[in-house]
Length: 267
Image (cartoon, rainbow, N blue to C red; front, side):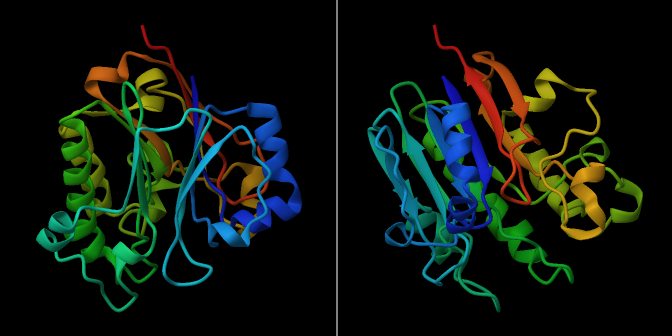
């Protein structure tokens, strides 16, 4: 079973370019997790007869949003967090808006596991959303994952908006303390691992360098591979050994992010 995750940076844009259709044709994902859709379902002309499609769109038009497309129909689908989790971590919003109304999380239950995809709030260049990210969002998201894990193992993917370690970005030294590479964001990732979730790519390739999933539009960064690995698949410890491959697909065009994938073999 092939599971892919891709921040498309606007589903309508990649459809217009034709790159999304080419990706589906070439890769044939069994389950596809998408972030930053920037559209409602009725705004995108998607011809995908082989897939069940589930969207969690932001209230704000043209902003954020996630989706899961699957060849296998899930048993259930959950948009966002349970009210109790949102209330516990006071996720009512900040000056940018309410992150629970930005379509940032969608979870789908399958026979042997949950698949969750997330578009984590960006801390912003001036770090004005770092506190919300660190003290509210990351703990709330982890609690959501652990609640799901009470019933089945969890595979979660998405744009986590953080490079975990120095190996995960081309220029770590000048980016220390900047958004995407602050101690707080990196600690959030540490907490996922401490809770038993495995970074599938690093589990397979602990020393692989120059493996990035996002590149700025500036200075020809993608062609020069001056990038960041901020898109991930993490797995519950109990299912991590079933992940037989983990890949990054920098040759797939259409977005400033590229897809990341895992291959799952269940006994």
